[in-house]
Length: 290
Image (cartoon, one colour):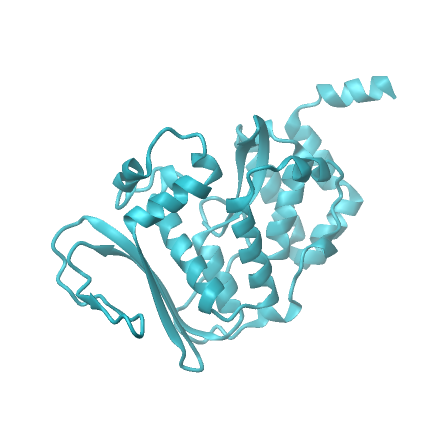
């Protein structure tokens, strides 16, 4: 037994992950979630882990656990697509993989419900806000743009039943939220004021530092959907887990639980009927490959 443990320790992390992913019990769980598309998803997980050296610092079993969360939501984890990510964060010095829903992933889950006529988010530039109705909460964006300076972000939804709602957050509030809750910024020396300078910049990567605008748009959209949107079971679960990622400062228990793979796919709520939403309404959302 001791010799076997030493042999496992010598194996490369990528080889350990491949062995875990190929285990029949793990294969069955991905098949339960993705059906005939499970093989391509498993291949994408292996490819992600093989090409992401920072993720290789994490326990392979924990990576599989996070990949299952993406699988049950039928969201690809290809970084280039932007639906979902598995990123490494450090929790008390321990590299920890974390499933993160992307901006496009939230839109995709909402559109699957078949209840939305419009979903829109965008940056707001200096001069574009002309006023706000304090009674109704309506914000008027019909002002004339004065510069390329981004002053905030809005999210808008309209349901098929006619209900509509808009929320807006200025750059300063978004930066404070990021500084307070983002695991990647927890030990970053930049202040919230310094983070506002990232607004409107061309993306250089993923996350608040690499793509501030996308993270800000996701933040306002998540807030709008969680408070005023029509939420399927899978959306409730996804948004709840995403908020937990913001709030969770101690992942020691999660790390211990993740050691035991395979993970039971039934641990993750999934609405089988939600994936058949009506896609005939605007906006036209590109279906992910899974």
